[in-house]
Image (cartoon, rainbow, N blue to C red; front, top):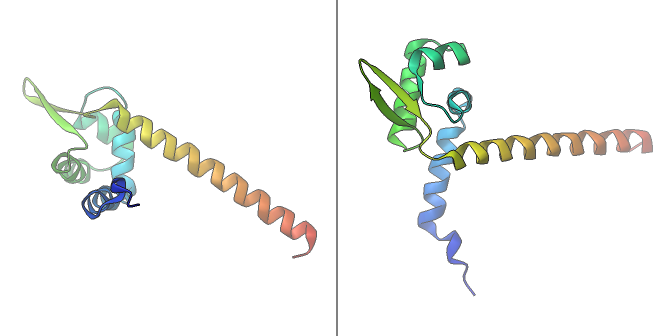
Length: 115
C-alpha cells in the first residue's frame, strides 16, 4: 500500500523549505519574529545581522511564504503567517537538544565501558 503523504510533490516542496531553513541566519530571523510583527530595524537589533543581510533573507523567506509583510505607514513589518511555524521551530529545537543529550550520554557510556 502506497503512503500518499510522501508523494514526490510534497517531498520536493518540503525539501525546498528545509533547504531555505538550512541557512542559520534565516532561522535566527524567524525565531526573532516570534508571534509579533516587527520592523526590519527590530529584526536587525535582535539578530545582530546587518540591515542589508536581514533584508536579503526576509525577501527569500517572503517569497517562500514563511513571512508576510505588513505595511504600517512608511514602515514594513514582517510577521509569521502562521503561529504553527514558530511551534514547529521550537519542536525541532527541543528535539535536537534532546538528541544531543542522548548522544553525549551514549558516548560517555561507551568511554566508561572501554569501547
